[in-house]
Length: 114
Length: 111
Image 1 (cartoon, each protein chain N blue to C red):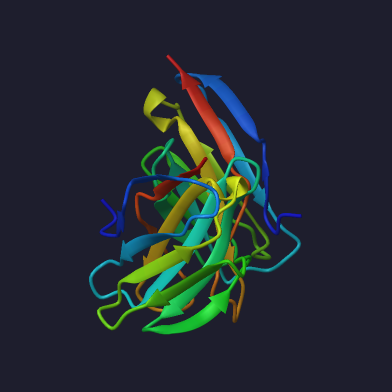
Image 2: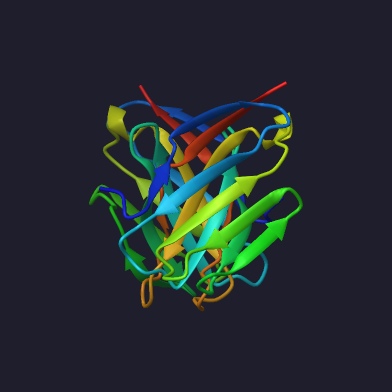
């Protein structure tokens, strides 16, 4: 158990809909990262928040947005969903943005868009 | 194009055999991590290496970071069926907050 929690575990929805994925980092970790994992793309970095502020952006679509709240939990919002958005979405957290950048991953949310 | 290239993509061996997975790049990394992931679950951190030439051992797993900090390898001695999984390398470059992941190596250890 990494200490990172994600809800829900599974999500099935239809094209055009909007969903919210939730993540709670390990106790004391200030950084939260979101990743998308699909069969053909591997693990792709989406976005990072550090203590409530956006710090880095990766290959995140404009239809996707995220935020980190004062209690450090984070939400990833996916809107106008398309079939191609079906994937595993992982949240990771780390303690500092120091040299090692060790990240600890949650169990993921499997999103299926029908 | 992946920043980190892993090879081989797939590896199937008999229990008790040894295996090596490679992770290569043309970029220099300030740190490099190895993760193992099982189907439907999140990647689990195995090790972090930060110094060029560094070798770390975790029971039957040996991790090496290249002298120039551009490549790494994972060697498993006397593989067991419990070693089956997707092995991912991931690196951080200086002043870059994100981790760049390799595509992974799927290891299957047959009983």
